[in-house]
Image (cartoon, rainbow, N blue to C red):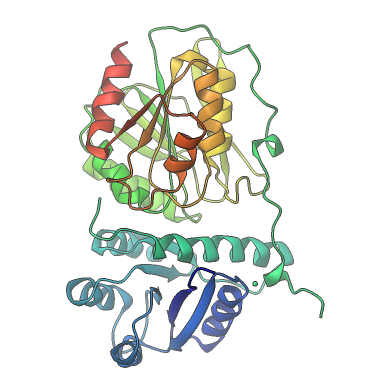
Length: 359
C-alpha cells in the first residue's frame, strides 16, 4: 500500500482546523499529521517533522499566510495549498500566493448543505493529493456526508455524446484549453506570448468561484489578448480569451458561423465544476474540425475523454508533455487513450495555437 500523503493544517480558526482535519482524514490516501493556529506554531512543528503538503490560511495573527509561504519556498520548498474564504479581496490576495509558489487554492469549508460538504470533500482531498505530486519550481456506523464518495459523473450529465453534426471545416479556429493543478501559472506562460490577433480561446481552469474573475483580470493585465471571466452568451472572438467561472460549467455553442459560450449549473463532472470534459464534448459537437483541444497540467483525468471525442470529431488535439507539467495526470490519461495528436512542452503550446490558427 502506498504511503499516505501527510498534511499539516495551518489556520487560526479552531473550527476550520477541525473541519479540514475531518474532511482530509476521511480519505484513505491522506493522513493529517497535525494542525497549527499560526505560522510560528507550524514552523515549530516542522522542525520536528516535515509534512508532504501544507494547507495554509491567508489571514492569521502574528504572520500572514503569504509571508509564511514565501519563507517556506525560500528555505524548504513544500507543496502549499492556500485556503481562503469566498471574498473578492481574498481572491486578489490569492493571485499573489500563486505567484509566490502555492500549488492550488481551496475554499474554507462551510457548514451548509450535505451536497456542499460532499463536494467540498472531493475538491479539498483532490487538491491535497494533487499538490503532493506537484513538481515545485515549474512552470474517508452511518456514513457522514464527509465520508460519502461522490459518484463520478461523465459529460453525459450535461449533454449527449457528439453526433456527426459539427460544422464543416472553415478557416476560423476556436481553441479550447483545460488545466488544473499548476495550470494558473502555466496558462499565464502561454497567454503572455500570444499576439492580439490570436484565435479565440475558451479555457476551463479548475478554481473556486470568485477566484476565476481575479485570475482573468490578472491575465488581462499581462497579455496582449483580452481576457475575461466568461458570461452566458459571450461570443468567441479573435484576440479574446474566455475563462469559465468557478463552480459553473462552460459549453461551446454555435449560431450560424459564430461561436459563443453557455454558462450552466449542473453536477460535478469528472469530479469538477467547471469540467474540461464538458467543454471539450461541446467543442466536439459544435466545432468539430474547426476546434483545437489542448489539455494541460493537472491531477486526475478530467478532459481526457473529452479530448478523445474532439479528436474523433476532426479537431487538432494536443497534450502537454510530462517534463513541463506540474502534475502529469490529465495529459497522461489523454495520451493513454490516444486522444492527443501531438504531445508538446509548455513553451511550444503558443506556437501550436498560432500555427493551427493559420491552417
